[in-house]
Each structure stands twice: as structure tokens, then as C-alpha cells.
Length: 325
Image (cartoon, rainbow, N blue to C red; front, side, top):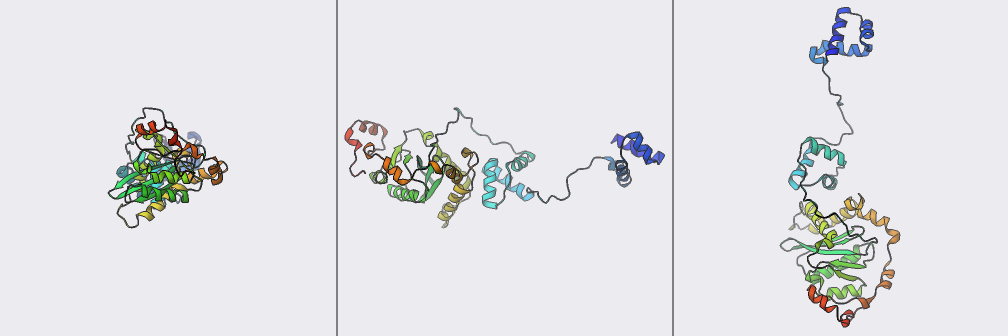
């Protein structure tokens, strides 16, 4: 500002614009600009002005969008990527992660505090779609249980809601899994919930040439894919869904379609499950190939109590269940 004041003063004293420009090393348009600003606003006109454009037709983040981002962060404790997904799903608003981070930084929102990992992250991922499908049931509300099936390779999911946690509902859900998953299911992995160990459920799996592989007790990390998937449901779907709504099944179907077709997945490097499925299409076997490789002699009925099940493994007759293919 000091130099600009000297330019203006020298011009006022001499009245010779060429002399001032040669002596100060500036152009005539520059001198005219500062002289004009001095005449309009005095000393204040010599201060730097913002270069921000008056209109920004390509701008995406206005006050409404900023409030949406801050509300999602404060009320639901979502990170930038999940905020991006929620804005796209509920408001048809597509913002980049950089734009969301910028809003959070300007608003001085404190970062989310996540528990530190005690062990390095290791994901159990199968290379072929359908090679291992993880199943689990979680209670959402009284009389509302969500059954979840997640393919360990592509993260493609099938969801359903039932009033009770029973073997009958598990059989209905398994029929839906085979109907909706676009690849053959070779192996089903569950926790040791009793609804999965019912004889009718295990017989159904054997009849459809699907291996039943329950995990050990107290090892939820082995079923980590479906556990993280259910956590996502609680944070992104159930946070805004009413378990008593008459349109709950429709809303859940819309959420399932969005998750499989539109929602980028962090463990898939930003791909959606359907994009991952297309990338693995050449490696995906057909049902006749899966049935040909299935060996009924290696399957047996298992029991939920782990120690008892270990003892039964010692008996050869337990490996040849009646009625298995």
C-alpha cells in the first residue's frame, strides 16, 4: 500500500503519467487503476481487494449444502466419504471429497476420534465371487431382525427383515440369497447362532451343494465382512429408517440396490460391488461346475456347541449324513 500511495502522490505532483511509470517501473493501466481507486475511496481504495468472482455458476457448496454436511457430521458422526454417500443417496447431491473436507476444515469441526488398531489390518478376502458368503442376523428393534448375506470377494449383499430369529426364517432367506446373488454360492460362513445349525438348514445347504463353514466361538473377526456391513447399515440406513414403517421392506430393497450398484466401497478401492463383480466375471464359475466339485462325503451335520462338535469329528460315521447328495 505504501508504494501505491507514492505512485498516486507522484502523479498528483507532476501530472505526467509517463514520467511516473518510467520512474516507478509500472504500466499506465496499473497507474490509472490505483489513481481511480484513490479518487473513489481515498486511502481505503489502495488496499488489496478480494479476487473472488461475483458469480460462480459452477460452484456446488452453498449455505444449504454446508448445513447438510455439518448436520451429518455433528448428528450422525459420519466421515467425509460417508457424508458424500449420504448426500448422493438422499439429496441427489454429488460433491467431491475435497469439497466436503474444505467445508469441515473452514467450520473447524473437530476430527472424529477412532479407536487405535492394536494389530495391523488384515482382510480375509476370497478371490472368486461366491467362494465364501458370510451370513449373520442382528436385532434392530423388538420384533425386527435383519438377515445379511455378503459375498467376501465382491461385497455384493442380500438383505431381509424378519420378525423372529428362527431356522424357518433362515431357510426363507437362503432361498432369497440364491435367487438374488448373480453367481453360484459355494460356501456359507456363519457364527454359531442356533438358527444356522438347525438340521433343516444344514440339509438344505447339502441339497444345494453348498458347504457350511461356521466360525469358532469368540472370533467375530473371522466374520468381519458381514460385521462391518451391518455396522454400515446401522450408521447409514437404520439411522434414518423407522423399523415400524409399513414401507420398511421397500426402503430396505432400495438401500440394498444402492449399496450394490452405486455406493463406492473403501475395501474395493472405490469400486462398487457390481463393478467388482464385472471385473471378476471371467473367474466366476457356473452352477454345474460348483456342483461337480462338491463332495458330499466331506460334509456332515454340525452342532452349535463347539467342543461337542470337535468330539464328533472323530467319528467317521458323522461325515456321511443321511439324505446328503
